Image (tube, rainbow, N blue to C red; front, side):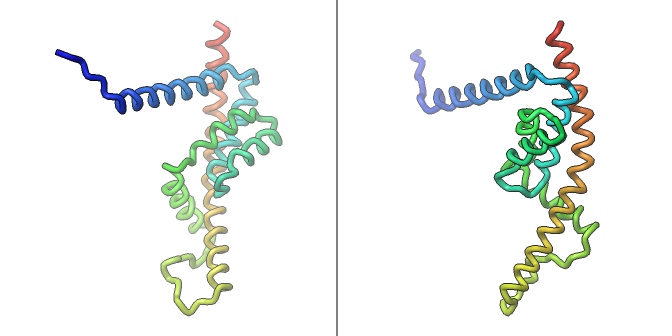
Length: 165
């Protein structure tokens, strides 16, 4: 019996292996950060908070800036912005929008656009939706950032304790 090597399966396996290797590299880099546990935790919290914001494409930049402002670790901040990624941002922002509707009383139904509406009316509707989403993001982001600070603090302390032993 002859073993037949199928090239596309081998390429797929190598790609998967590279992904795991890069994820392990990120994990080890995070575990070996030369920062205090509170700095790492503040970085996590900054990243989680900005990851919840509707800052499409610039979340990492804002997270690093916020982490620097609050004396957090920029790498931990950049890494934790990945909470919102192309797979999670639609349900995440839908939830944030629903939460925002509880705090901001706006009529923001994109389905109710009428053909005779002016461009100014449509842009006002868009601003109302953006305001609702932003308020919802802040209302969801603040508690998650606080929780992630304490979780990040525990993880960082454990990682550093394990590294010393």
